[in-house]
Length: 110
Image 1 (cartoon, rainbow, N blue to C red):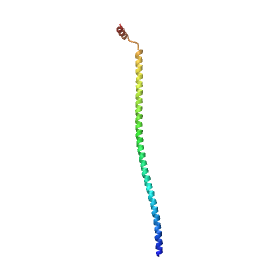
Image 2 (cartoon, rainbow, N blue to C red):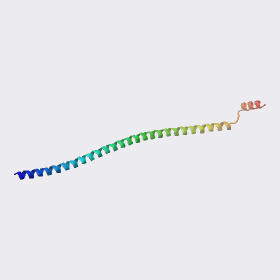
Image 3 (tube, helix red, strand yellow):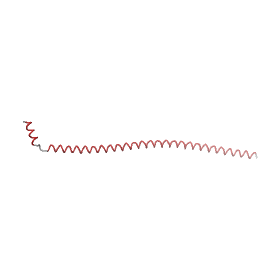
Image 4 (cartoon, helix red, strand yellow):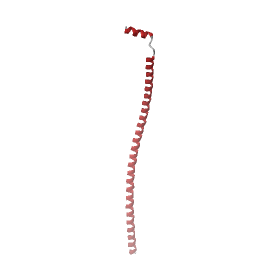
């Protein structure tokens, strides 16, 4: 009976050693998993920061596009106004002088 108890103690001791080794392996795996999760959280934070920066740049780009459209519109208006003024100026130069203006010019010359 004592031999049976010794054998049983030895068996339980061996089982305890296996359980302890298994527990250490599980703890190591858990630690690696936690480190992986921390790394993943860091990556998610970096991705979120990059996305926020990208959104800000997209908004800035859209503002620049709107500003460019506005400037283009102003440029077209200015060109149209310049062309209109040029036509008016040409029309003034091509218009025959009125008799009263011609008389004033001849009086000034004389």
